[in-house]
Length: 238
Image (cartoon, rainbow, N blue to C red; front, top):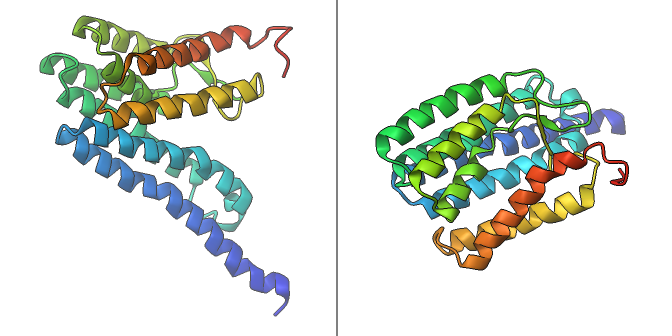
């Protein structure tokens, strides 16, 4: 047997291990869901942070292992969407429902609306533009609900923001993919790491962080919300 032929099983094992790594996000989602049900919201978002880390690097690993060629019986894109729906949508919706951020009946109906709208969004073939921006709000409910926990606005404001974000999923606007969009990539990655650091502080402090963490959250959000305005800016070079 040639060296190349002997390497094929190794490549397949590496590719399937990447699929297993992606699928492990589903197990992490279950742990986060249990924490949300038990009203351990700091623990819930700690698990969701781990899921976000897995989601952030599994694509790079998949491309390195060439999973589309060596483990093609598993559709990595579908697997990723299944796990993402759990961690980006379902668990945050349950956390919102179990929290005191809104009256329980309001949170319940909001959760149903968000889940239905997000299912449609995840199935939309136009989800991303050719230059890797998301069309509409990219259903980052794990991030959105974390903001609600950290900022603690009146429930009426939380409900209004939730409705607005739901509508924005289908609005003719774009949101940046923090790793794949070329425009201002270095600054965007730096802002993403800064947000992760702030989120860690918030979780460590039981989602009741100091003022400087809240100010940092708002500043990062302002950057990401404003960045689409520079998408075609002539002075903002690729």
